[in-house]
Length: 320
Image (cartoon, rainbow, N blue to C red; front, side, top):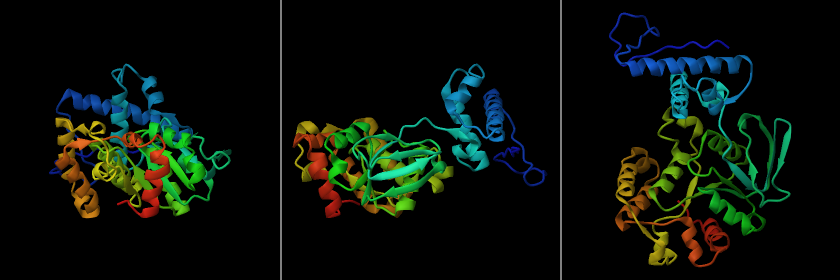
């Protein structure tokens, strides 16, 4: 596959024909950025021609001195290429390190390998990087639960959550990467199941929720292929602190950075337009001035999250 690049500048008042615009390199850093991008493109071209896959880390180690011994330089170049070519990383045969783990009532295959979570629904399985090779998806689950943190995932596993509840539990271990969101979209599309998201009651937790729902700000160009409009917010809500009688020692004051981040979240136009109830809860977070982690619910009992909080919210429709 031959790669053709059109470099577009912001000022298009030239007599050049369409598609033949030029980029004026006014600073040395601009030239350096273009040099890095072209070197990465050569590696991508090789991967595509040879039908092989490589990670961002693999690409970095091919020319560490050129990439200024910084992984972020490679990450930025790949992001630039995706924007320029209007595609995703997987279209370039660039794969991510697996961070997603799953458990529950699910069975699927990938590249000749079989993944059977159903035999032991409380055992974690890493999800394959090549989501496009995932096939033969079978499930008897009633819903999908996405949790922000691995610690919460393990809490649910230890409490035998999936044995008592016909569901699939997924965690992206923080901010979800592209394979995590693609795999979740694949499950929802194939199984037609409702999906709920459980995050910390703080600005970072809500930002992670928004990344699943709307896509990431950094990869806005790819949002339509990665966003999950079906996902519902299960908790933890700012209003949950009063509803579940969390003691004061479980609540933490918002820092100045937390407040600034929350205010920035409220400025996102899509929030009011598409999820006004979410916006009301975020406003309440700012008004109360306190935050708390999902694990704070353990103040009632170690198994409160698995035995009371999640089941009652799903069954009672206490999500937005």
